[in-house]
Image 1 (tube, helix red, strand yellow):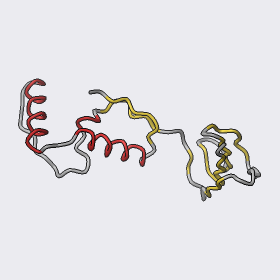
Image 2: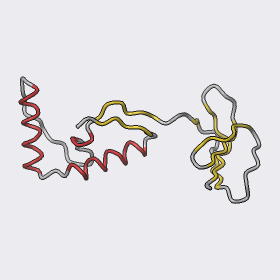
Image 3: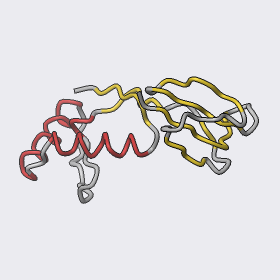
Length: 119
């Protein structure tokens, strides 16, 4: 069992408080919580606490995060746009798995907990 106490955080619309989490589930929100002896304790220092973010529409397989900027060819149809993007990926030997991983790491670091990806 994994237990974490986050002290001195400010959930939206609530006063500064503590948060006790066991196995990924919030067990208690209150001030002055006494954690179990084996609990990890994180000092929130008055930081805001809010629910995880949701990226409701992304294309992780097309992410160019971490790569140099690439110009796109002008196109007038979605078919041309897709063909241009595929050509760029072949010419630059862009690894979709590596780019998807970079995208996921960046999202998680920004507080995203759920991603809906379109491929």
